[in-house]
Length: 341
Image 1 (tube, one colour):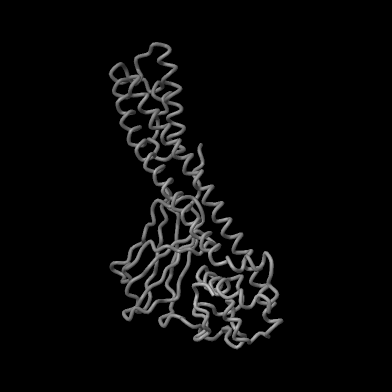
Image 2 (tube, helix red, strand yellow):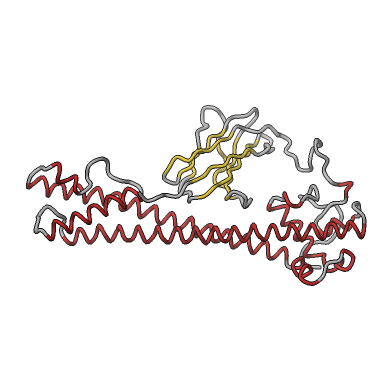
């Protein structure tokens, strides 16, 4: 019977209806765990055989493996973008130092404004990849032109080699980051595809079970569904509805440089708050902040940093003195890809 209890005592804790196409990740896991554990006992009754039976038997493990793979790829992507960001920060600082040194060399000989324009030094120093890309390419081209002409208003060979090495390292890390992003996207696409396949499989099994047993049979619970008499009726409190249900205001904005600012409002009786984040549509939330103050004096926007490109769903829940949770509030934020100029 597998590693999931097949007792029907007490019913299914998370499953509230038979509309499995709208399952959260937790609901889907519970349905599939019951299905995989018990399908062998009822396969003949509901007409499940061949590839469908095999898919039902392995559904729980297949889904958990797909979630794990998506999580691993997402983590590798985040790590790669973090390393890329560090290289951008490192090159930004080094560029400013190298620029100051070269300007000292140039101004020691004379002070031609037009000359420093050829190096791309006019305006503020770059601090993001597109700007660094353009500025250093300009610098490199001008450097080798002047070296060929015997002009002394250049960095030493060693200093120029070091600058370009840092540029090449940054560029290579950017490539790695976007490869990891592609692999993360593939993993989430595979997870969504499996979710859809399982939805169709469960629809087949549910309708087959209803045909064989009727829609109020207790055995439906063992396959991840509910008897019709236990399905939640809209307008009535659902099992597990928070006792303290008022939602809080919640909004998110992309600030640039892989940073998202999240602004949460106060609510009557709120003591502390929690923020979770997930890739949109994936439902695998991770906690990024807990214990956030809710009083007006101490409540400030929370900044989520080092967020790689993509669309994210943020969830905010607060708790009162009795540790009762509110209904969640949501906001979606898109972190754009950097586009080279």
